[in-house]
Length: 137
Image (cartoon, rainbow, N blue to C red; front, side, top):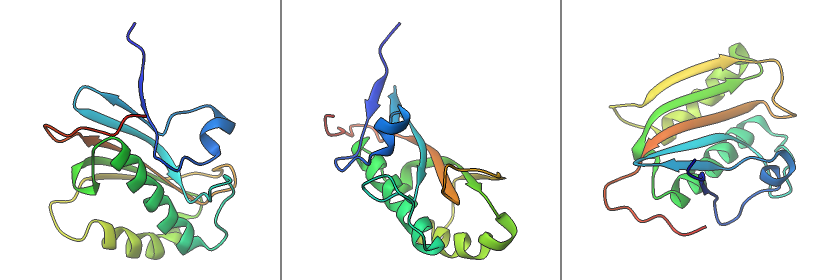
């Protein structure tokens, strides 16, 4: 079996070690990013919900960059929400800043009752651009 090609952002947060997972796995021309949350460097949740969503997208951006990608390379998005009905206006406001014009990536939103102290999580699959050379781990 080929060993996983793990990708981590330069400023990796404590959750990766605490929970034993990689920020992303590179496989051929695809980057599979783990769910990113609005965590601070110590792994604790950002208490302000809007800032937690912004920080989740910032953590995702850093993970994508480490894999040689940008938001424009995302083909599939899955988000997890602890209170979708009340959170959606805020999430859509931030999401619209990131994905401001069509064509938009696929998006599946899932309501959940627990995210380890967080209220929003985003995971994606991105196509690594041809010729992109991701920074080494």
